[in-house]
Image (cartoon, rainbow over the protein chains, first blue to last red):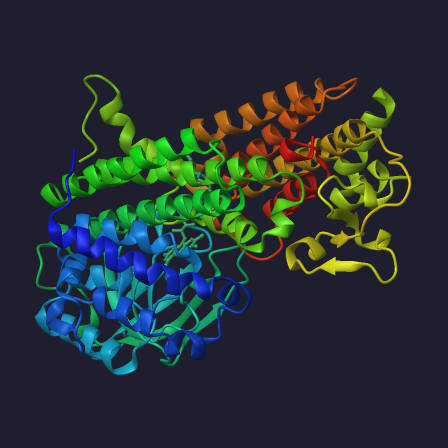
Length: 381
Length: 196
Ligand SMILES: Cc1cc2nc3c(=O)[nH]c(=O)nc-3n(C[C@H](O)[C@H](O)[C@H](O)COP(=O)(O)OP(=O)(O)OC[C@H]3O[C@@H](n4cnc5c(N)ncnc54)[C@H](O)[C@@H]3O)c2cc1C
């Protein structure tokens, strides 16, 4: 059973304090996620941006306990559970390096990392990570977006195709997009892109919930990509594309699992505030506390085996389902009309559905976990 | 009762939530909503009523209104009404199933249609079984908890089906948003917990 160090307990406390600030903007961000002035004006959002930026690229101070946010999965998870008790929609509106940052860390050389994080520091902007396509979701290795050499003697590449459901597709100014250079899974590459760039358009899609994530559609019409913007060129061929990004996915999968759990705690706490002294939360509370332990344990496992896809999948599978169940529990605990009487609760019902789709649907995660569940089955590592 | 239930399912299936709800609520005073918020077809909102803004619901032709305290004795049998709305929801769930099948038959994963994946087929089969079972709980149901249980199961089935739409069911107006508004509608009309 994972025990938290003093530093991590401090990080948990700090995150709890920040959660209260996130809550304040919850309904406003849901109503207008594109009010960027509100987000830029928030000191909490700025601190979260700095906390989630690796120390070498930070442009401001963070409390010492916040170091672990970027240095261990456990630190990230501890912070995310608490922050999400504030509001997951606002959390996902944070202009953080996110998955794009982790991909650049996994696949970029020193100069590319410097370029990416310098750009973020200068613009304090949102990032995008383009993997999913209109016709290719879970089966990302079958993506259709292409990265071809430009005709003639030009050293540049041309990016053509489309991505969909990508967070910050419209407002992100820097990010990573995956494309194929040939027919096999090994020919998939990641490139860094700036927005705006000629031929690159991003459009937001109206979302059911988790609106701070601002997912949208991106299309690439022969977008020029300089060779030094192609990630992973310094890595062995097997590590350059998708497979090199597995570590990044693992970290984010845990983070999403932690956010789902934090959202479930928020729902529990909200209901308890409405029904002071009521004991009807005992079962849910016990399940939430056990899930917190599960998520911590899986984060520690991932810290020890960062390429193991099973541990993050187990955590995310359990908590995404638990969060949905928490909304139903709340509905029966508060009675008829409660979802219309309590807009925050209704918003969270929509928000928690998002976790199902982010970074692996439950079917895909079950398939990831399955080989271990079958005696004698092959490991999914 | 059986006929009313069947008619409501048919209306929900053929015309969608707003059409079905119009039939289920025929003759019901919005003031009878057990929690003080009534879900109504947009066309049935009384002039001057206090409407709670909800864009997703509006897109489905549903409004949430606070009718204020009703005068006189309640006319509707709340359990029978919740059963009729349950039947409407079954119709809506069947619509959702058809839309999921259509969506998945056009998507490919690992070189084969997603509809052919065993986990997908199992989820569709489970939804089918759940609908069949739920349908048989409604006619003659007299205990509010029985009807509330049917609604809870439908909310769960709808979510399992919505998952199959992938992120396409999370953006814009889509079959999953209709199912979500169906859940909100039930939340307004199904007596449970503290209202009993
Ligand atoms: C809030 C949010 C944020 C997102 N952010 C990003 C982002 O920043 N970048 C990005 O690239 N994408 C992002 N996505 C998209 C997300 O990664 C995809 O939704 C996800 O990969 C699933 O793809 P899909 O939606 O196309 O569903 P599909 O792959 O079409 O799946 C449809 C259904 O079929 C099932 N299925 C698929 N394959 C199988 C199989 N082999 N066996 C059994 N069942 C299967 C799925 O479980 C699902 O139920 C985001 C989505 C959301 C909702």
